[in-house]
Image 1 (cartoon, one colour):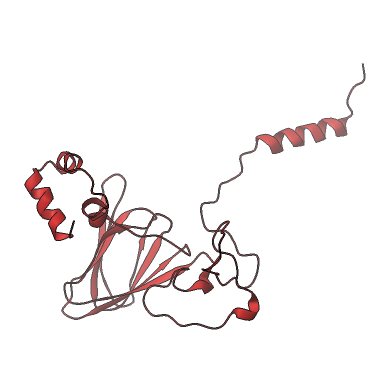
Image 2 (cartoon, one colour; image 1 turned 120 degrees about the horizontal axis):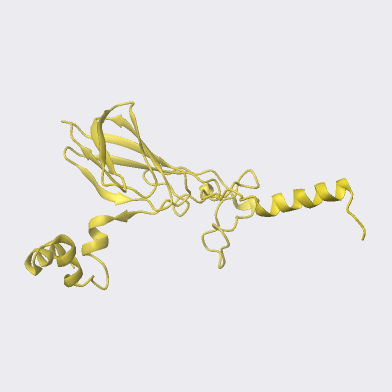
Length: 204
């Protein structure tokens, strides 16, 4: 019977450790492998994000309002996007979620109530003034409301090139086809009349 040398045992041990060591999973957008990768939105295929335009077809761009990879292709593969919201007095960004990104909100002008709800149904909020920031974890329901006496301006940034937006009210009351009233009446513990009234507000 031939025995294994110390070095063979060490190699075997190393391989076993390597096989059974859990590798951390990364849930963020992939790191870019080149300086820029402007998205080709007309491409017929996509692996993870959009294919890159040839560098000869890339030019500088400016965009006001939402800037994600679909409206600002230069963000492709960079894992970031932004949005600007101008809120009139009493204006509301309704409760919504971003399934693929956490968000930071910075108030540039005005006075804005920002809040989110955790998975344990705990509500966190703060009234922000110019220069203050609030962080919203990925996937949690949140909103922004102008509680000041003047127009407000906020800038939001996301750690995804395409954070996605799911607006709670429209997701429940304005789907095509409609969610059955039986589901909504049981969920909200109200009658058909209330559900039909809410649906009518959304043109459903």
